[in-house]
Image (tube, rainbow, N blue to C red; front, top):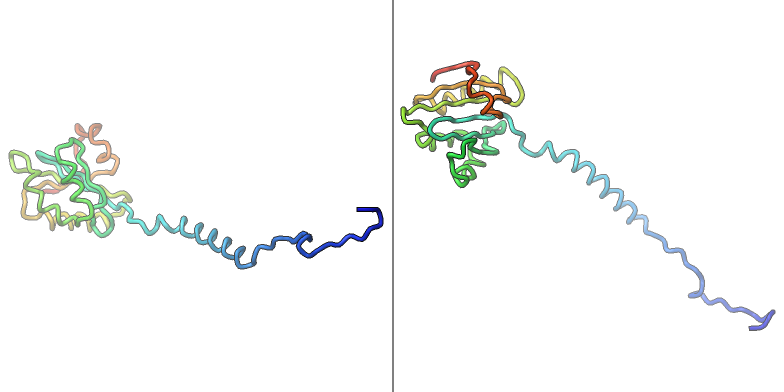
Length: 168
């Protein structure tokens, strides 16, 4: 090439700015907004634990229930129930505990039913108490109400006197 010679620039030699499409930007923003909204609302859609019910006899079972009295979680503090039996309880209604009551009773045929609310509400507590009385009505059971902390830490509270006792 010599000085003063003509230079030809073809169309493909020109720098073209790569443009992102407007709909792509809008789609990314919409996805981000949807993700934020979903993450905020997701905990509200999951079932919240409403109360805890503990059955104590020869074997013990503690269940966490939701507002519809559906068992969300089941466990045994003293490992007297098999893991399979506990897993089978999850997802069932509280009324289904009737089926295992006889298995839980101690040698004297007694069973202690303890319940606690996660949020203290007198009306809701009465409703749960009435539901438990219906479930265990014809059986020899003692019904107690405790604070949730007392049920969650059973070893510390074994020597304490139960707060309220109601015989069914």
